[in-house]
Image: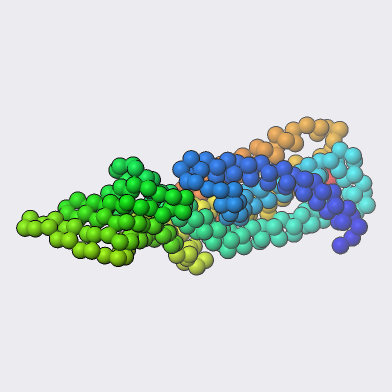
Amino acid sequence: MNRVSRYLLKHFSELFSSLFFILFFITSVVFFIKLTAMTAIIKMNFLELGTLYIYLLPRTLIYTLPLTFFIALCITLFNLSKENETIVLFTLGYNPKKIAQLFLGLSSALSFLLILDIFVLIPISKQLNTNFLEYKKAEAKFNIKANEFGQKFSDWLVYIEHSDNNKIYSGVTLYQAPTKKEDEKLIVATNAVIDNEKGTLRLNLDQGKIFEFTKEDIQQIDFERMHINSRPKTPVGAIQSIEEYWNGVFVDQKRAYDLSFFLLIALFPIASTLIALSIGIVTYRYNKGGIYVAMFSTIALYLVFTTLMSTWHPQSAPVVVSIVTFLVAYKIYQKRIRAMF
């Protein structure tokens, strides 16, 4: 790598790091606000919120890195143009083609890393995030309180006289209404505790009696220890392999949309590099403004095109959108840069 390339990369990396931390902070705040909204439904401490935030990091990087790369490249080249440094570079023989080759190489490496993130980290983190939330929902759903009527554990109505901070209950009464398959039942127990293991909840009862009411008589059974299992409607699931997870794109429209959208965001650095050069390399005397309008218009149009194509036909959207964007970028680059410099 020659001195000019190192000079360009130095300016670019300084701006890239600053912008990345700003965008990453803003995106993190948005995701963190969404997480804290869940505390209205699920009780979580700060450590558990941090765990959920870590699960969201792969998706945070997908949104921040491509946008940071594009904006940083535009502004870096514009600042060099503003100081007439690009003219000096061209005079020394470092033409726009070499600049394009340098940053196309960088954008390709970035897109490759983001694609690895999509296919490896996102499936794992998303499943861990879902399972963690279901676990907390199951835990919150069965938070039985003392001296309250109408509480349920599975098909049983539950009433308890006392509970302590360790969730040990005393004076427990359970009632099950009669069904076509089972008779009416009543259980009374001295003590009880609820165990939650991977979303499957178990009510452990100590020293009690079971009363079963039939049309003919009432049967009584004494017990020292009894277990009642209950599984929530949305159980904690097993973690799928990466291959199993992404095989779902052929049957799950939502997963197909997610893959298409994420891939197009990951390919944005490659598709937009030539547009960034066309926006940033200017003759400052005649093009003093308009860089920010051009930057954000490009981002907005790409996101709209990405969303529409991913919704309409997610299987072909990554190929179609990225190729069309790159060809449009190349035409703009030829007209604005190669023809002038």
